[in-house]
Image (cartoon, rainbow, N blue to C red; front, side, top):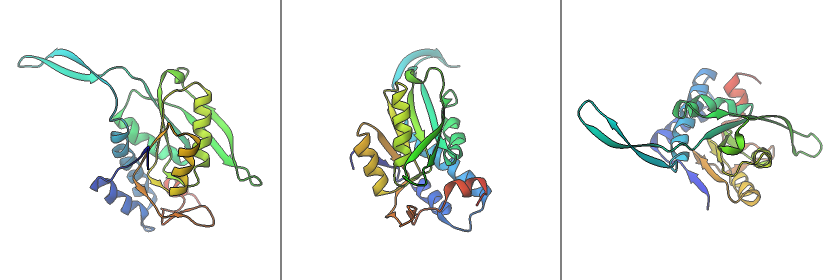
Length: 209
């Protein structure tokens, strides 16, 4: 699919298998989410521009490259997206963090925005929205809608488990948004859970039911 990047690195696939196991406890599940997020972020930031500088090594002057000042922000979708923040900021410590909270209206089944807190300079930053699961895509689309409303021009979406339905929904609503995922699963069941998936990622990250 255009705009979809599946990170098929063996370490990512191995860790996703451990994530799926129903016997994986909260501590290990949380650690795995963070580690997988770091690996996926490595690929999602592959297009960061570089500039050449000169510096002195202990041996000689070197012409070498650094990231050329493009500013990043990560925006987790509450609450499960919080589980990915530690991993992505380990790679990009200077990135700022925004937060978006959404709940599903019990009647319309549509996501309702209840919280949005962004860095003051968000419109000057490239934004990567993070959420472990891309199921229907409704929450992801609502989050991207809000971020674009604030004036952000460059948005990517990063997840661990994706569904064909969710990917298609994002691509239809936001064809300019690149999607980075660890795996594409079979689809959604009648309760809109990803199959085979990992269950409720928020509950497994935070140890709640």
